[in-house]
Length: 239
Image (tube, rainbow, N blue to C red):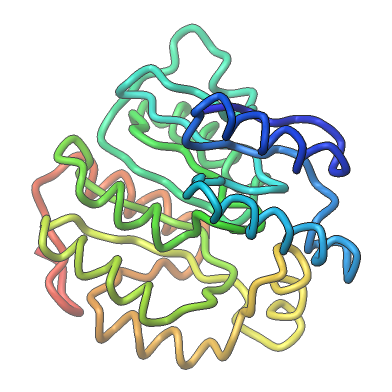
């Protein structure tokens, strides 16, 4: 994997260079794509097209990065991960906000909870929130997958990811933001995703067995509960 942190105008060239070198995946920190408007959307569309030519996986652009602490792979610039005493563990986290992902790293460290994954999706040009939910859920080292969700473009893909979690008995805990019209617009403008009706998400969560946190504090409490016990989520019940 290559980490890309060059100006937006150079990202396509770097992608092609990586493809020529046989590098299968990139984490792109660079901003200046769909989140800034029409010109950025055009550039991101080109990025997606070029990536598809070689099947290159891209996390981002406009993301904080990814980390797989159990395998000593860190491509995430959260300052918490720079600490000498950071511990790996059984929690997989994915966030559609780089800032919140950093908060999760700091709070898990404060509580003494070990992170297996710490992933920020950014604009989700190729790899998205659902891909990461599915991947982490299938890892036998992970006891709980948690996420900070602004919006999902493909409901069927989320359903498929949650089926993977159910197959592996991995609880999924989500904090959904954008619950009212104003916050939904803010969430959509942040990553370019469609926040959608909160009622639709609520119904889907109930149907697909997601444990929904009401606020940040409850999210961390649920993460701690599931990571320190053998509880699994079954439909709308826990235990």
